[in-house]
Image (cartoon, rainbow, N blue to C red; front, side, top):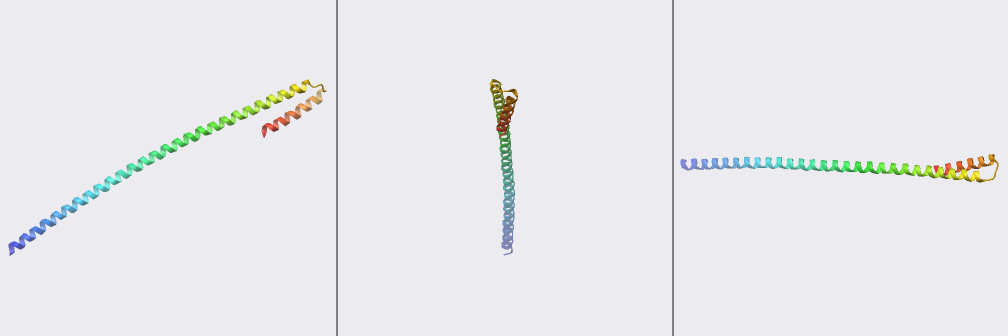
Amino acid sequence: MLELMKQREESMTQRAMEMSATVERVMADAKNAEQQHRVEAETALRKLEEQREAERLKFERELERRTKELERDKKRKELEMKARASRREQELKEEVLQMKRPPEVNATCVNLRIGFIAKSAML
């Protein structure tokens, strides 16, 4: 009887040790899985951050390109407006010179027309 109880105790001790080892393996596996998941999450986050940074840089370059394009267009339009105003001014001066009026009348007409053209160009 004592022998049987000793065998049972040994058997139970053996099973407890096996269960303890199993628990330790499961805990180690869980820890490894958690660590692997953390590494994968960090990698995914890093990729997202890199992608976001690349998109931000692309957006900034596009914004800069469009801004320069708008500035160029604005300068070109200003130059065209000035050239048109200058041509019109020259045309008016030539018209006045061709008229048979006294010089003071011609100067007044030119000044009035130049003022009108300058105001029109500014609008």
